[in-house]
Length: 312
Ligand code: BGC
Image 1 (spheres, rainbow, N blue to C red):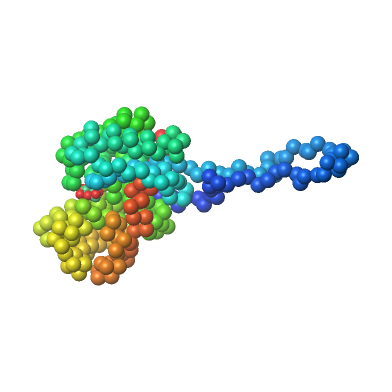
Image 2: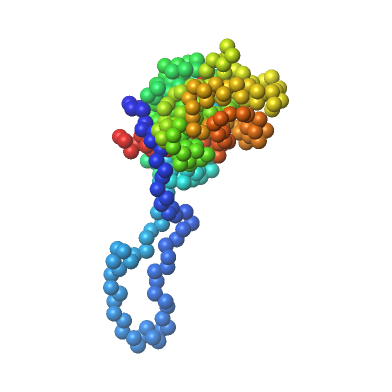
């Protein structure tokens, strides 16, 4: 990409969208009997004005989102007005080692498998779990080192033969939560964190994303925060929810003291179990679980790509 996508999250206008099964209302006149038809001369029907013609069911505006994770590469067409999948998600295992040249053809396979559900001109957004600055991968905390310096946008556009937008995974998830999920309609400063193998962060101010905040790598108590407080640390050290919550308390207190957000949203797979740990936290900032969970990356990537396409 040549330009950072404009990430202003405007609440999409509520436009009625038709579903594939929708049919236009019947337009045929009531059947007349053969006799009546034979004996009554009927004036030819006057052409209907555009206003009285029944509207064709509106097709949802589609985008395509692809989420590259450590274990799976997932993709789905996204209804950009509703913020939902327009067809079932496709998932292929992430090849190991997960180098650029191994991943690119798998991304192409995901798109090929979705073929029947695509129109071929959807904006394509792809997430990647590293800093992505103007399309180029700049870090590799939990991914293969060979990504550093890779022009991910050129790599995937070449593999797909179409332009793509590549964004950080947490930025995509955060953007989806602000546009369609737990932080929809919230103005001010929203901080979205994803707790998984690492800790991802997205900072959204009045609906506009500040990309690549990387707040999972804050130094807290002399440690890289994600090494202590990511969900993988809970699993690795077999921590109880209470033990893990102590680490989260330290992390989120530090974050709120630095950023003073209006709302914190907690995503990542473990947020499904939010009732086990969020009530144990004592923060001044409201903290809520994400709504879109595993779908957030795909939905956010497609939405960011659509925004970037509108700006071109
Ligand atoms: C990476 C981030 C990523 C996060 C979640 C961190 O280790 O540095 O770029 O968003 O993990 O995948």
